[in-house]
Length: 191
Image 1 (cartoon, one colour):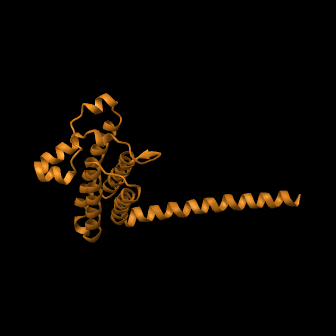
Image 2 (image 1 turned 120 degrees about the vertical axis):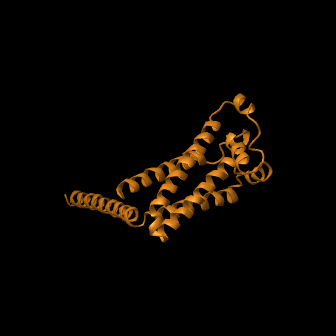
Image 3 (image 1 turned 180 degrees about the vertical axis):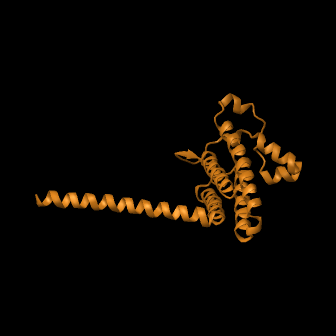
């Protein structure tokens, strides 16, 4: 009987501590969202870019132009978010820019996911636009034509690369969707 009561006490104690831990995490997320939204968004995007660069370096991955465009969009979200945090008078503008950058990120990553899901025959028919690095395409073709060439994708953009449940572009799509949703809620709440 003594063992049974101690097991019940231990079970109740673990269940209670799990609820309090979940409440603490929920309260932390709510506090950051309500009071430090721009700071959280900026550091979140910065962490994503740093992780991608570190994984490229240590896992010997080569980023295609669509991946590089995705990183630039995360860097722009970081810059816009930090500007919004430090200059409160233009916070509405920075939130609209974050929303716009998030939508661009969704478009870029949906294109890459589409290319990754093509059959081998369809991939072979793509133009080799991903063969050149993004910076070289912009330098050679000009800014807009270089971006358009990179956006068309190519066989190297179809490579899956690293995967942890999802691949890079699928994770980026999830993060951009989170940025869009959170920014929309902040824009609606600020009215």
